[in-house]
Image 1 (spheres, rainbow, N blue to C red):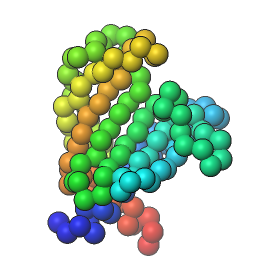
Image 2: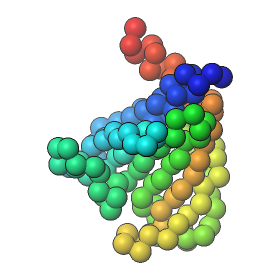
Image 3: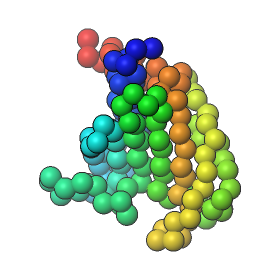
Length: 140
């Protein structure tokens, strides 16, 4: 896989969550995109004011990828009170009946009172390849 393809898949990986989550949960929730220092990130959560970056405390989900790294970093801001920080779980990402499952770690989140979830997934995962194909088909 060449660098251009990896970069495209990095962006496609960020777009994955628009396929899975769909419409905002509330009028205040929205997707935001950011690029900085060679990384691209897609955030879902409370819509920031125009020109402002997303507030870390109101981000429900983020997918980020450093260009050329081949890895997508996934962070879910709040999980469940049934889960405990330090535990490991499996996270499944799916699109168009294709799924990729990766290990995830639960992190303390004192502000929310429930753990956050952190995982990484290879950009070349089957689910990201499907999302890239869906994105190309949607442009046609």
